[in-house]
Length: 318
View 1 (cartoon, rainbow, N blue to C red):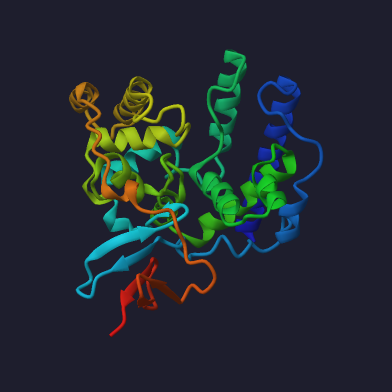
View 2: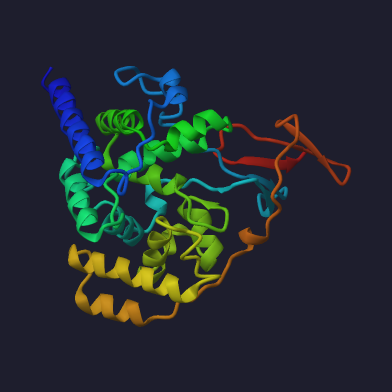
């Protein structure tokens, strides 16, 4: 009962802050669109059960072709995904994303009213949007709903700037925080967020930019990847190395301010080169099985998919 009352109270305060933000900025900060997110509300109302997309199922990985001995031959995908468990993500990567995206991640319950109000004040002072108020959990909700459908109406509903969508997103974030640990939520976020170069998740991103696994990321590498989340196109180090370096160093500064690294570690990492070394995954074919996902024929060889794997794996029969 107390938990339900706390959720209602949090949503009430958030709703008030949203209304105040819209009133004070008159569309400068948050361009609210009239009307609720109709398509989103069809899948779940403000007080209904969370949609199927927000389950503990990992996002699907790439289709991979393996040799008889299990060696990787190639990968096929439309969106490069390779979800990994928590222990295969470098701790420094987890620290970097929290530092730059949600400093109070381990303190709030899914909705950070204090952070929302702080961002509001900062944006009012700057006269433009300088800082967002969404938590990592709210971002996880948004990205999951956005990436789990090809329906234009549902995708629009997932990103619509309206009070209805914001409240629904907040309610679902609170629900996720009740169901999963912080470690689980952070791992899910890092496995779905977009880092640019068609890399969805930290493992494909680590391979795409540095040719390493997510578990082997160094401090400068992790800071660069964390900095890409906000604007992966503008800060793409392969296109804009100068901008990427500036953004990386901003992440390093946040990490030092929050005690994740020492000033000496920050200074050393900020002077390091980007060290880009794109891995083979960037050259893999962008393809998925056309109609039957359980079998495929290539060069007169038939391939079968083993069950029980996050990624779809094709092995030669016989």
